[in-house]
Length: 594
Image 1 (cartoon, rainbow, N blue to C red):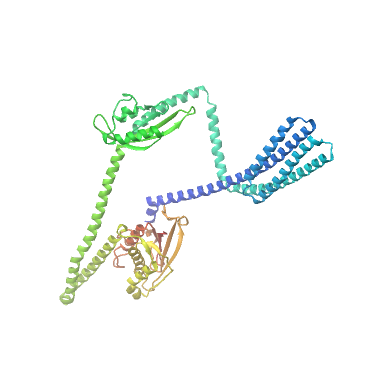
Image 2 (image 1 turned 30 degrees about the vertical axis):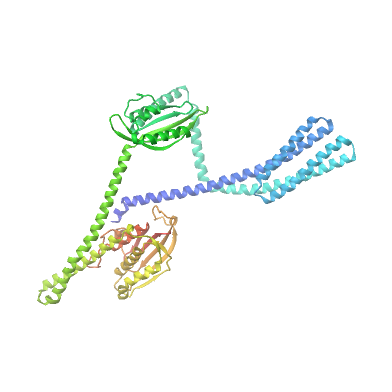
């Protein structure tokens, strides 16, 4: 049995799902590290940009100083051109620096100091020029200005050097982070490198193809064109192009075939096409076409056409604008024949309605049949009781045995009908989810089982359970069935103990939750010290009418745990069973955390 289960289709799907989940996790992990790596590279590049701009500012100031000196020596205004240009470039670099260091408070403060020094330096330049023009260069005042200018330039160099040092410190930190990111993503980088090398090799191979290969490609293109035409026929779609600048249409051959005509049998104009449109859809389609021509866009539209033989076909069309290098606009469109899809959809709707009706009829039949069976069963049990009370002494030994078996069979029939009724009531569509005090639900369930709990001297412990969004009646039935199952399959010589624990879990942390619809779940765990079961039957016990024990050993119909499974499914949850023979059983219930 165990080998059969392991080889089952469900097990294979489970293995595939687990493998896919692991691959997705690895992909997400790799993506996260690549993002960190990209960010670290950007930060390193940002540091280099700041350093370059700082060096540029110093260079521009030197150019300005050189232009000033050239003018002072030669009195040629030509030297003032680089002087003024350098000042403007320095201002631009300074603005760029301010933008680059906007998130660095220390560098912002340094920039304020640098701005002051640059302003002071440029002011000294201006004063020196004016002073030299008025008083000449061979004066004490001029030398004093030069000295101040030199001192200011030294201060600027020191300030820039300080800022560069700060950026270099940041650069070392960012390089370290970049190296860490690199070491964390070697597999990704290696894979990208391999793919890149393959692409480069393929590109190199294509570039080096000679004229003969090019001719072969042209032949292949012709073959591809023909295969495209064939694919249009097979997939029942046709292409059309609207040349916006020329206000003309061009239809593919298969578009004509979709209309029931021979290729190119009539002019490819919108007026000719409209002659095939169903009269009820003509006005709406004309509005869509006018809107398409005006807005140069065509979203998905649906309409019908009438072929000349009277057949009505359903079409779907879509268009997308394409602009070539010479500004020629074209609207490329695809028109598909979706008649079979429409008919299949209608057929599917009909079958769904039929299935829904059948389900309702089946549920109604199950419910009515179960109720109607109770009346004759009550009469049978009544006559059995009278026979037992008044005629038992007149029966032979075999008659007494037969009567006992009839009573047992009638009791089992009563239990089976009650369980069938309970199973039929477990229908999500008939109940409403609501916030529910689960501790109160648990207490109600224990009250339902109070007589059995007292008879078996059972001990039930539980954690505090938070409010959950559930169907109250079904949640109570879930508790009753799970606790009742533990009580039923308890050891005769040992008082049963049942522990109910609660915790909140993330779906990603529980691999056995296949394709979870929610991020988090309530987890309820029922642990008992009963007779347990072999783990190979962990899924079979939830199957309707499935029993692991002879009916003479333990009472029951094999429906109780099936009801539990149906209730959990109604809540879009999961239920799992684990057991060890003569050691006990564990039932895990996962309900969505809403």
